[in-house]
Length: 212
Image (cartoon, rainbow, N blue to C red; front, side, top):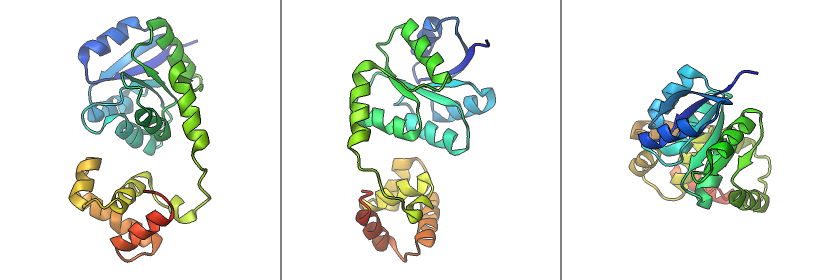
């Protein structure tokens, strides 16, 4: 059986080097990246089986990598590897499409096992994190089927949510690492799809669906 091909994404070179050393013979590290843009490039060109993904790094963090890679239709699997065990970080990357989340206290043998399991399609979590991940998803109300909401892209939903929170276009651009012009384009698209006239109607629409 061929070895699992891995790309390591982390903004600390020494940590990447350590992970590369710790990973066993069951996997092959085919590349590394230190920020969002270099991660996108490496994943696109190397086509790994699994990406070991840091949560916090320059250019938008792990969630931005997930959004851009999985949004393009890629089937690569992601395993988050982070010092953070904060609920919002874990839930954020899992909702973004990661198959698992482990903390950097994990041993090399355990990490190798986690990577192989994710490559095989399993969901893998550090033991302490699994409980509140399950709780978070179990306690969240399943949203009803909403054709209008389903018509929006993930980025359009993000822009809509920030508008409903009262963000100005410049603030949205800064928050999502996009240009003001791109924000305006997304807003126009959302208005057209939802058949609304202005941002005030957008806010009411989002609040009515508890998207804020």
